[in-house]
Amino acid sequence: MTLTALLLWATAGIGCLWALRRDPAMLRGALAHTRTSLFTVLPIIAIALPTAGFLSELVPERVAATLFGPDSGVLGHLAATIAGACIPGGPFVSFPIVLALWSSGAGAAQMVTLISAWSVLGLNRVILWEVPLMGWRFVLLRLAATAWLPPLSGLGAEIILACLPPDVLGR
Amino acid sequence: MPPPSAASPLKRHANLVFILGLCAASALACFALKGTEGLVSGLARARDLAAVMLPVILPALILAGLVQVGVARERISRWLGANSGLRGLVLATVAGIATPGGPMAAFPLVLALAAGGADRGALIAYIAAWALNGFSRILVWEIPVLGPEFAALRFLASLPLPVLAGLVARRLPGWVGAR
Image 1 (cartoon, chains in turn green, purple):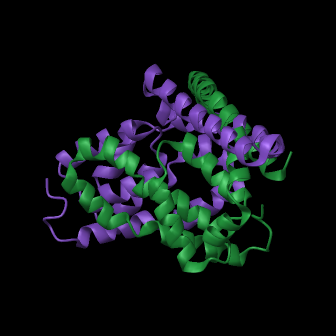
Image 2 (cartoon, helix red, strand yellow; image 1 turned 90 degrees about the horizontal axis):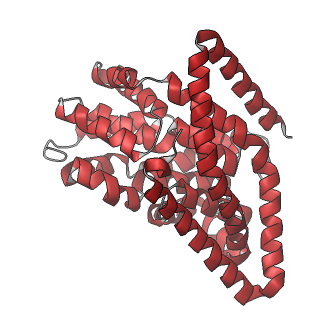
Image 3 (cartoon, rainbow over the protein chains, first blue to last red; image 1 turned 180 degrees about the vertical axis):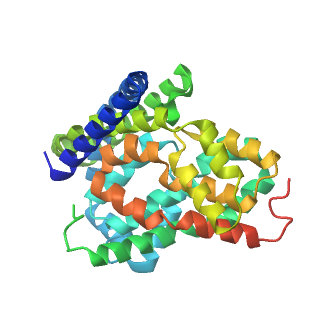
């Protein structure tokens, strides 16, 4: 078990103790949520893992590394923005795809851009949820105000990575 | 917490069917292009990923459950509605990060606040923060699939952006976003 996994377990343990001291019913409620999402997430992860494995076999090493590689620069972030906006579906689709790209040579900062683009621009969500609920004009405002955030988050990640020792986030 | 997929049994099955289809299609393509060897090495990658992911799924989901019961909806509305200026944008960002659940949790709240005349900069900052850094998605999906280090990198890199988006939204001409 890695250090980060231990840290996560410790945080979860402290959180549970805190909830228990505040109100045991609260802890029970939280664990009920945990159980529900475990049953939702586990079957999906069980399918998503081999999917990510097969996809990363399919993505030729050079394509991921050339398009989104750690040294692909501004163009790589733009490509990641476009790719992210086009990934359909929820997190159960996007995260395995990102995992596949990342393990076949894409850079961590470029993957930050890709996830941000999927989150902010994801056409799927815009069409299914946002337009019907909020109306076109509001969506226009939101896109105008947020469309430039994904590459910016990737550049922020580049700066953070540059301050870290190399290989902290290598794959 | 229910991930965005838990809206209804029907929708949950649709997700499973979709990812199953993707899995079958990629397995078939793998087999067609690289034969049995491709399938085996794809499964070997999956095994390596599982070794990284499995130890963190449970604590991540426990934390997500705690966030879900610990953050009251009324508090989120209060954070969003009351303040203007830079402080309002920062509070809207915090509210967006703390809002658990998928689009069906976040958008109705925004709709209610927009109808109540809330500052649009704050609304944009809220949506941007929820979309970029929503805590429950990070805990349920990002940490288990991509690892805590990557999640932390992306979280930090995206943290200031919702405030910037809110500032931009306030400066856009009035006809954009008029209801």
